[in-house]
Amino acid sequence: MRCLYSRIEPLGAIRMTDSLYLRASDLEPVYAWLEQHSGARVEVWALENGHRAALLAYADGPPDAFGWSDWAAAVAQDPSELLGLFEELELAIDGDTAAQLNAGFPGLFHPPPAPSA
Image (cartoon, rainbow, N blue to C red; front, side, top):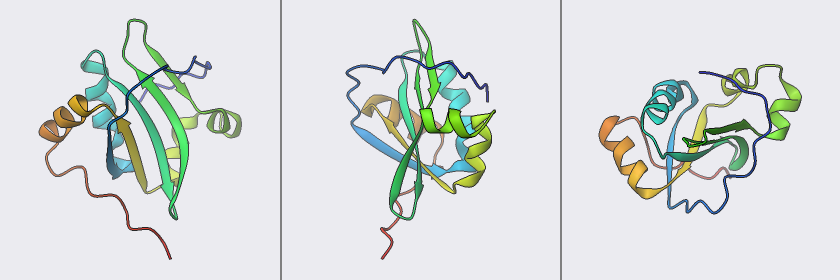
């Protein structure tokens, strides 16, 4: 996974209509798919104990926009290494792209984790 450190402008008025949930260890092929399919816009959130933490925002151009969240960039020289700290991720993504990902990766995504008590 490439890792860019520059801060990007917010992706603007992205209409996020779906959330897909997957193990952090399964993100690499999904990210590669996103890079190959133009127009994809996604936010990646880490999930832990019922809480979300922003990890990165990605939009496939033009122009490409990719950036780690401020906290991730501040605590790690290579923020992609933080993925190993989390078991579950949420992809906030538009409905059409979510449907294509589900079709391209059958069985990879799962229902949202149950809230912790």
